[in-house]
Image (cartoon, rainbow, N blue to C red):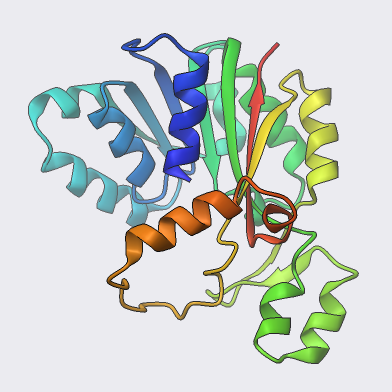
Length: 233
């Protein structure tokens, strides 16, 4: 996903431009820190106190220049208008958040308002068109059968959450003024890997296969996750 995001940033903004980035629901700050290290000015918004503590600990270990380029704000992604002015960011990330939001449209509209003209909105969502893949490959036939007709599922944390369908998000993004520019699949072949599995020795080849599949039909359409990139008009 990081490679996909970098591809979109490089293709949209001048080389060397320091971008204003907002990471909504930044978690432990993996992408936020990576982009701060790349020279961008990054704001991370997160409401989970544990994740904030982890992100701040990681940031504290970075050189001063990187620490100065990143700030962390405690808050809900649905309240971006409380914290920021419209058009304040060149790039807005919202990765792994929508599955926890029952009604995502207001959140997405708020994120689009944060973008400057030509800005990039990056979403990572659970693929509602492929919910039967994981239980099917695991031999859970009743679970696979039920998954065809729903966007609800139980994640690996044991939480009941929701998925999004590509056609629905395409329509939503067009309606909020940030139409879909590109989309990728994420975790096409590796979604059934066990949590905590060792990184294989040929991980670079694995990543190359996943990256290729994530941009190639029909493989990307059955990925566990979808990475969607919209552009503010």
